[in-house]
Length: 148
Image 1 (cartoon, one colour):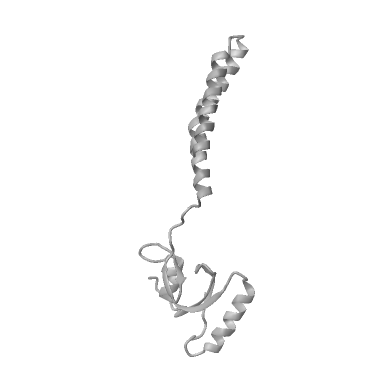
Image 2 (cartoon, one colour):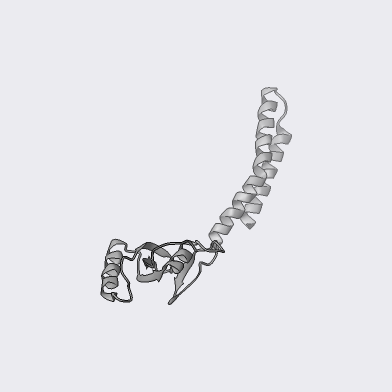
C-alpha cells in the first residue's frame, strides 16, 4: 500500500460494482454520516451512472484502483470488495475475432495471387490457372468464415 495522509475516500459505484467516481473525504464519515449523505447525493446528481456511494478506507480505495500486490482492480459486490472478474468476450466478439484470424491467414495468399495475375496480364500470359486458384482460395476462406 502507498503511504498517504488520507484516511477515507468517497466513492460512487455503478450498478456492476465498478468505480464511477471518487474523491478524498475531508471528514470522518463515521462521525459525520449527515455530511456523507450530502456528498453521496451530490455525487449521484453529478453522475447518472452512480447507484451506490460509500466511504472507503485508503486501503480499499487502493484496491479499487488496482494499486495492490496482484495489480488487479476490485469492485463492490454487496457490502464487500472483490477482485474484478476477467473480461469474457461475447459470442459475437469471439466470432469476429475468429473471422479476423481467418482473413489474416488467407490475405497474403490472395494478395500474391492478385499480384501474379496483374503481372501475367501485363505480359499477355494466360491467367486461367491464377484465376482458378484465386477463386478456390476465396471459396476456402468463405467456407472457413461460414463455419467460424
